[in-house]
Length: 273
Image (cartoon, rainbow, N blue to C red):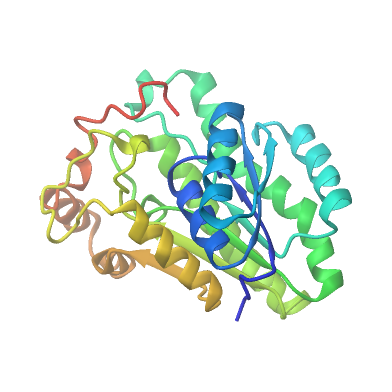
C-alpha cells in the first residue's frame, strides 16, 4: 500500500478543481504537498487554504506543464529542494468542448500538450529517482472519455485515450523493470466542476454528474490501496464489453443514453480551459 503520511506528493493542476480537493485530502492525511499550477493567484490561495486547514503549507510552483523545457527545469529544482517525489499525480487538464471544425488548431495542440504530452515529461523527470529508491506511485487522471468518444470532445477524448494507453503501457513496463512501483489510472464520468459547466446527463440516476469531493476521496483511497484502475460510476465499466457489439448497435446505445448530447449546453469556464 502507498503511504500518504510523510510522502512527497506532487499534483499538477493542483490549485483548483479535483487537484485542489485531492491536495486537501492528502494534506489532512499527513502528505507533504508539492502543487504545480499555471495560475499564481489561485496557487497562492490554495496553499494558504491548506495551511489554514492543516497547519502545514504546501510548496507551490508556478508552471505551464505544456512547456516541456519548463517542466524539466522545474522538476530539477524540485528534486534539489525535496530530494524525491513519492507520488506523482498527472492531473492537469483542459477542454475546448466544441465540434472538430470549430476548434482552432492552437487549442487542439494545447489540449494534447497539457492532457497527454505533459504526463510524459513529468513521469520521465521523476520516475528515475522512484526506481532508485525502490518506492513510487504514478497516478494518471484520465476520463470516461478514455473509453468512449463523445461529440464535441474529439480533442479531449483523443488526449484521454492517450492517457489511458500511457498508463497501461507504463504499468506493463514497470512490471518488468520495477515491479515495486505502482500506477493508478482514473476514469470518471463528468465531474460537476467549472471545467464542465453546462454538461447534462439524460439519465442522472444512471449516469450522474459526479460530486467533486467524492471523486477526490475515491482517488486518494485508490492511491493508498494501490488500485490499478478507478472507473466512476459503475456503469462506465460496461463500455469495453459493449465494443463486442456491431458499431451500429454500440452507437445506438450511446445515443440512447445521451452520451453524444451531453455536451450540447456546455459552457465550461468560459476560457476553453
